[in-house]
Image (cartoon, rainbow, N blue to C red; front, side, top):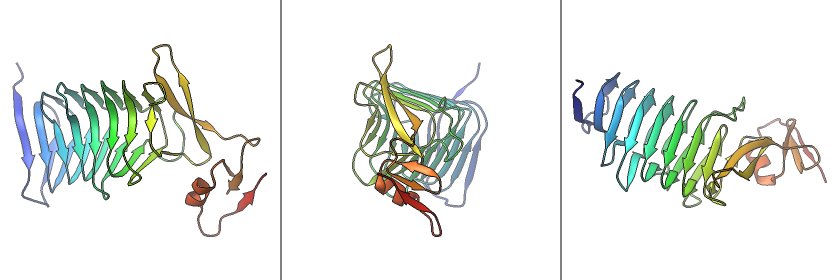
Length: 231
């Protein structure tokens, strides 16, 4: 029978690196250093993972059964090939400098909110080479909740699901050249995916990419680029 480790913690050493390759765990806290999780199962009734350093999570199963949040990030966090199931917020981000990137083959299922963004940057997928199938972020209340204008969410890949009109709350920037399309599925959840902007609806073209929003086009401009206005 595999034993369960109650806690792993690094709160003292900014130059420390912890590598977790397998096992059963309850909590992991990283205040200053680097943590690389490349396998294992995390399950707990309290907050499972907290990070204000640098952390990667890959090939992990996380199950949270209480009422606050499964993962809290105020540092740099990359997640791939992972399943997160939560009775409350699955991921909560805070602090302007925080960066959370949800990469390939990530499935988030929350009974409340998939990702709650209080501050910082959240990247859903990787910019370029659109993949509509992954990651998948589902919240029975909100898929993604951007609390204030301080949070920046980039929607590059996958699908976001939530209650009707609540798959995405707040400002979310789609992949350049794409818009966000929302539909209601058979389970009465709203699904948000990326859809390419057609020539008939474009307002401005930047380096061959169509935009319907002027500010989004400006954000994607680089020195020496080509901009063309359309009516």
